[in-house]
Structure formats: C-alpha cells, structure tokens
Length: 533
Figure 1: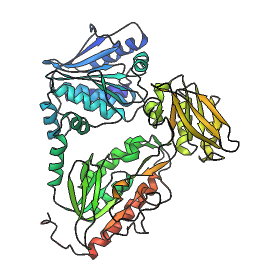
Figure 2: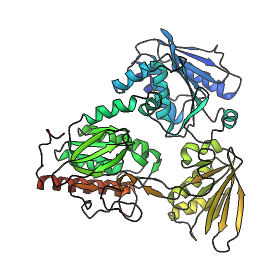
Figure 3: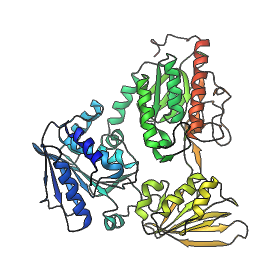
C-alpha cells in the first residue's frame, strides 16, 4: 500500500511519537479489507511504539481505530482507507494519538477539552468523505483532534466509496457530510473553530473579544485569497503593520485543483498554492485572522482617520487604510428545485462530490472553462454527462472543448435554458431544459446536477457603506485600486476587474497594496495609531 518514499516519510513522522498507539482493525473478506490489513501491517512495522491488531468487532468492515495505548478512551475510527487527500489526516491521527502536540491554537484545544454535552451523554460524530475531496481533510482532522482530546467525543470517519449502500441509505449526495448522534449536523467544509461555535454557545463571544482587543492596523485587508495575500505581502514589506481578516484563507483556491496558467509554475493545485501563500503571509509578520466574516464597514470621517470593520461574531477591527479583497462565490442557477435539492443531488464541487455519483447520470450547467473541466472530470466517473450551455456555443478554451467532444459518454446542449431541477422529495431525479430558439422543453432523467455558471461578488455587506458598487455588485476601483472613499482600496474578484483569474487577482492585490502605501505616506494619522480606541 505504501511505496518506498511514503514509508520513508512516515518513518520520519513516527519518530515524533511520545506514547504507544494501537491500531485495531475490523475486517471482512473483500479486497478493501485485505488492503486495510496490508496498510496497518506496514505502518506497525515502521515503529516499535505502533501495534496492529486484527480482532476488532465493529460492524463497518473494513474499519480501524487508532487508539492511545495508555488511555483507550482517546481514539478515532476510520472506515475505509484514508488515502488520497486523506493520507495526511491519517498521519496526523497517528501522531496526535501518540502524544505529539497538534499545531492548533491553545485556546481552541482548551475549548475542545472543556466540551460536555448538555444532556450528559457523549458527542458521537460520523463524517463521510471522498478520496478526491479537497474540502474534506479540514473536517476529518478537526473531528480527529476532538476525539483524541476529549473522551466524551467519538468520531467515525467514513470513506463514502467503500460504503456506497450506507451513503445512499442516508441520502449523502455531497461531502463532507457530518452527522452528530445520528442526525445531520452540517454539510460542507468546517474548521475546528466553526465546529466549536456550533457546539459551544459562548465560543463566538470569546473569539470576538480576542479579536477586538487587537491594536488598530495601519493596513487591514479583508479577504485572504490571492488578491488579499498579495496585497498583504506588499504592505508588510513596506514596513506597515498589516492584518488580514479572512472568512476562509485561500478563498476559491481551496476549491481549485489543477492550475496550469500561473506564469513560472507549470502546474500546481489550489490548496497547495493557498498553503504557500499562507506561509508567505506568516514569513512577512502579517497578523492573520481566519474564519472572520465581515458584516459592516464604517469608513473614516476624514483622510487619515480610522476605518472600522465589524464582523459576524461581533468583533471590531480598526485601520488607517483598508484593502477589500473578499472575492466571489459560485452563482446560483435560481430555478425551482435548486435550493430544495442542494446537497441532495445539486452540487457545486465536482472534485468533492463527483465520486458519490459513480455509475450514475449527471448534468453540468455551464459551458465556460469551469463547466467544461467539470464535465471532463465527471465523465471518468459517472455513466453519462449532459453539459448544458445557455449561449449558442461553448465559451471554454478550445483545447478543453476538443477534449470534451472526444468523450463518448458526454452530450452537449447549447442554447439551452435550465428551467427546473426535479426530484422525488428526497433527491434529484432530473431537470427540465428549454431550447431557447424553438421554446421546446425536454425532461432529462438523472441523479445529479453540477452548477458552474460563474461568480457573484461577496459585497452585500458593503451596501450601506457609501462605497461605489457596479450594477453587478462589484467594487468600483481606479487604475491604482482606489475606491471612491479615501484610504479604502479593493482588489481581485470582488471588483470590476474584468478577468477573474488567479494571476490577475494577485496583480490587482499588489496594485492595491502599493496604492495603500502611497495613501499612508501622504496622509498623516488623525490620531496616534497606538492610542486609537
């Protein structure tokens, strides 16, 4: 199961174990059980403090627990093989069970340890993931940490492809999908702090108090995608005290896999690039405040004054200059059935949810690069893909169109308007598409609909701020990234910049950073930054 390089890397990691750990497998007779036995045997052979046993009695087979030998209540269970994107999660589970301290804020660890269910019972989490899901590891690792730090928390992490019948029985059509004590808890990516805020009613207030206690910044960047990160690097290198407050650092990069058009980089993937940007932000001494969603902007009353940004948890930050880089999100189709069947067959992430539709029929709505790439990827997994484009022709790059047209299990519909997504009350069973020329409607039977029709700027929170927005809600900026409000700049996909591309966002972030630098050196502070309250 592990090649020579993986064994060498894992051997190095396991050298950090401080306590003995036990791997206890519950196995059946199938090939996946054989692979699980092989994997655990190989891991145990790499370190004397790791023992593998194969006498487990759990109903899910194959599955295995990673248990701290000195305290059997500290354990986490994997059902199926945690390989692919989840191999790092497996490594972390081994290390944490073995006493290696996690690189997590100490306040969060204390919150995890203090959690006690109101009913006096236990928290029993079940979470479904796919091996190609790049949003799943954060949830897997958060629940793993919680289970290993608090004996009142159980976590079973289930690879959906291995337990397809269970996935269908529970109606899981999008991952990550998390259940708590048998009931749906959350669908989608969540980090540890977000899970705690749902379980601990006082968590948000504690975080808000900590954030609000920060001194005012010279430059505060709202948004942590490529534009925000680039802006931060530029202002920090100019010597200004810089902060980045992001709802999710990396932004859309976290949902992007293959990147082949970034100059100087032949190929990378979004999550990897996001990690590299995060490291660079740290190297430049930038104060990163993650999981912070802006809710209100109060501009300074005069040049050189303090701008204030309020966040959804009630925190308030102040800064002499702001750079708004809140990015954009997937546009909804806006037809009957879309909201009703969200996560029940309606999906927006083909990489995450595609494996759940193996052998089924799906549609992709949208004929741009994202839509065509999604159709190409899905065609390798599903029985059939119908791609529907509203325009009279596809808008994707020609090289992608040629690849799409070469696939035998893909149908392309142009000049088609999706008017309804249908279902049986529990999950999607089809959609209705209208020929825009003839007006004729066609019902297509299928199990999944992937929507890839462009982006909407994340600017609703700015509606009452006095900031000039375009009719599409984009922030209006000039050639220097400046808005109509002194000291406030903007960059990236949230602005009127035409091309929504990573490299363009980075460039506009640098431009906005330089614009903010110019503003700060030309405008004296109205009050001393260290004394501002």
